[in-house]
Image 1: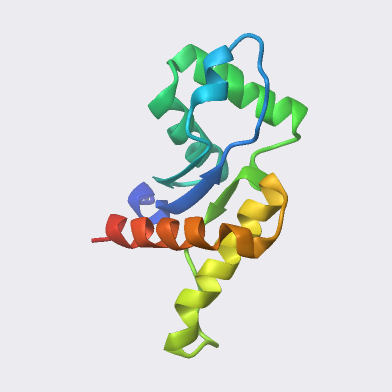
Image 2: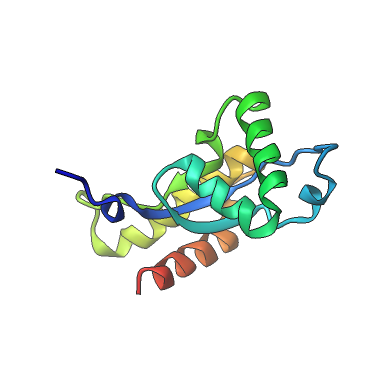
Length: 130
């Protein structure tokens, strides 16, 4: 019996690290925060990179993230959200807090300084699902 891969696809927010990669100077100019549908953190990062860079340069960046920064998990976060214990009014705010904390963890600063970006990301994720 084969499993349906479609059932494993979910929205992710990606926060690409600020790296200076000599082999891929154009990496400095790409959008670092994005959203995508993927099946894992590595897929999500790859999707965001390959939309903006050539295949070869995207692979170079993927290797740099994996080798130098020790993996992909810190730079992509699933937006699948369990709201079992929350009242409806708090679900949206909880998502904003989670995304803000994620961006703060990658780029530094206070979680609240990412509130506007977090709200925009959540809005775009909602549009992806429709």
